[in-house]
Image (cartoon, rainbow, N blue to C red; front, top):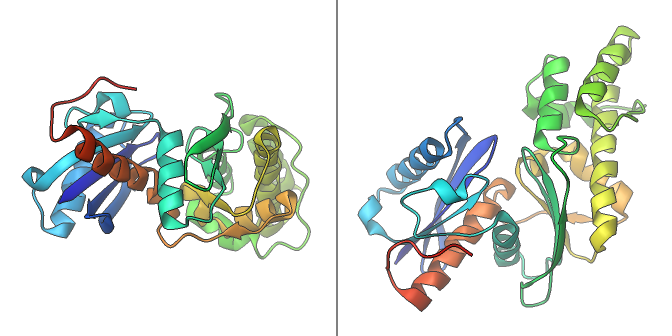
Length: 269
């Protein structure tokens, strides 16, 4: 039986299909300004890649900032719960999840059963998020995917002290004008992001095992800097860290179907 999870974020949208508790297919794409459009396109794409049809889906759960607007989902659940559920499925030993999204950052603690123990998220400031890295990359005239490999080549990271994304971009321009290498600037930025993440971690505590979810988890320099600041190893998941939210949504879809059946859209909780 096929279950779907759709995660609509500010920068990307993800869709996951599961069959009897096993990951069947997943897709990630750049989000459009309209969350409904993003959700529709990403679901159509993952269905096409798997050779399935919308009618084959027994139940669908949506998550992410646009979750309440997805008309084809029978239920929507917060990304905090979905990232906890998805990370635990990928690695039952996980206890601390750091979700660095496009517009916010969350630290989630779960117990040995995968249930939520505590969480904290940053405010609306983009510092310590994917938008932060995207702005820095634009200032440095590189694609955001190049930041990680480039930063790992840094030998003398620059000090980034500004907590504002706009001010950080100004600092980056200043360092470039002073002749500092892009590699050193990139690693300085990675360390700055890790410090901001650590401030959130301290509010809920950290327990091994630790993982990072979201697209920023693919930035190796940020992962290394986070390990250094936290004093804990960041574990690699057996799935793409960017699909963890959608994966959790698909797992919730399976649970909801078992409990409620294929009924129409439920009251949100």
